[in-house]
Image 1 (cartoon, rainbow, N blue to C red):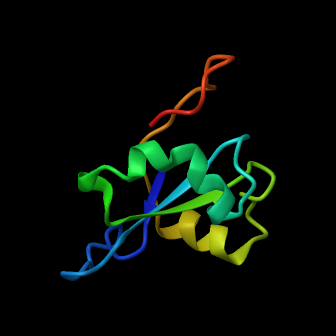
Image 2 (cartoon, helix red, strand yellow):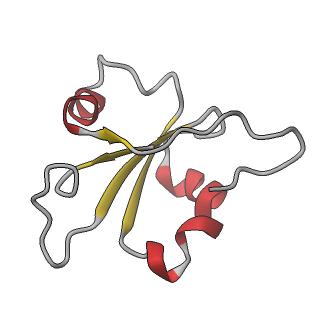
Image 3 (cartoon, rainbow, N blue to C red):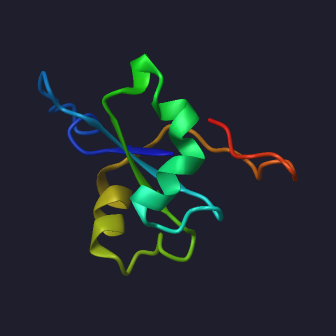
Length: 91
């Protein structure tokens, strides 16, 4: 998980969301599809302002200008290993 955007730059404002990049084999890179995999974690009240940006490993490459910006300005705040087989992804 990589924190990026205004919070990573310490430029957040009152209504800024918290941008995080998430990379996992299970992600398609289409947020509306991927949100189902992480919805249990992000629907909790304390996570309301988090804006997840999901990527598959193949999409998270340095040729992508958006990924370049995340890598240049972002802060790695967590890493997880592979999920145990027969279990859904948890955060």
